[in-house]
Image (cartoon, rainbow, N blue to C red; front, side, top):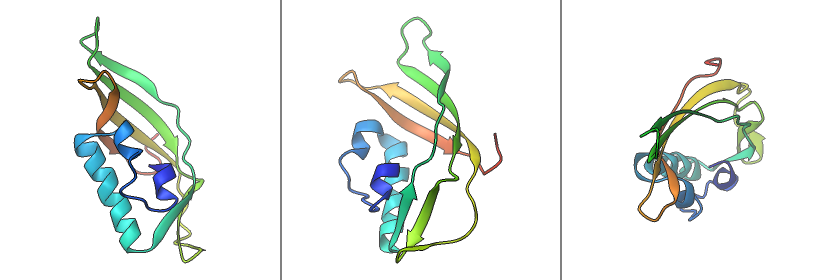
Length: 118
């Protein structure tokens, strides 16, 4: 999403390599809204994902991932100008990742909490 956000490319085929279902829909809508408003993202968030749950444990097909991402250096711009001066920060992210029929793993759902949530 960070890469596609550089141009607000809501139709990037790269997105479907990593997300599907509800997760892909949320990402596409967010990028489409930015596209309509002439907004792009610069920089990138940092991540430190950790597996928090595997189901079933012995041969997982669903994995839950927890992260404390920092969006301080991932900012939105319009017409080359910083959109607002509200700093990002550390936020909790939880993602459900499922094994697909073709053997790949894709994010199916995710939740991003507010700044300061981790």
